[in-house]
Length: 296
Image (cartoon, rainbow, N blue to C red):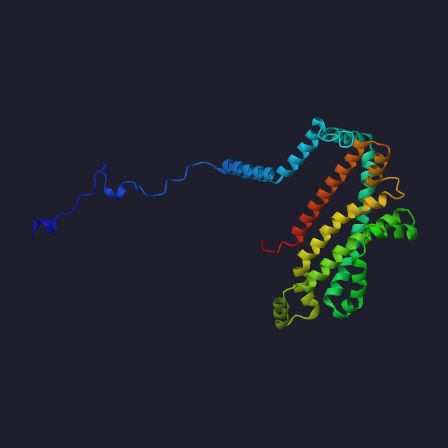
């Protein structure tokens, strides 16, 4: 037998290097050992800070102008004091307890009227949007009153109900009910017809159809009305508190204007803006909680 056929390759000696042992230039480098979570956390923090800075740039610019223009004499600082003086006046009101008293009175009235509007307007809107006979019966009255300003009706509420707490809560209720009612009706009426037909073809009855399809689909539109009503509940209350009230942010603003305590007046306005912003953010959080099924 030939020698080449009988010869076998010897095992490689230790330390021998073969081509298949060499590192591949195109191979991915090994991940560095260690925990890179701190680096990822720093990147997320930087992105969050950058986003917040971009979104708040306009507000920061407005506040800077509020502080600078009166000090530079561009506007009369008697009628528009610098922001720092207004904040100092607000701090003095807070320390003395007056701001807390007025704020508590306004928030209590606003929440009472807002909650009553939700309790009354949402069921009525669902009934009008779902049952055509109810809509045919109530639509003419709705069209009449929806175009009447709530502020224009404040003297009517005062004459009928007096100048007590009932007038203020009812006034907020009336103003908040319309955006909730109209958005609830719109949310029910604009449900995708294909969804309704598909649910009916699967054997869902009217009650289950409304519960499983119509109501969840209308939730985003309903919450849009609720958020609008949340803003109205604070704004319209100011008008009511300027008529016969002895406490509240509206009363504070008007009384400060009459007594020419201008920084106190602006402190009340800033407080209203902050409360409205926090209230809106709270409603957004609640909306996300009830709309977790939505795909964003």
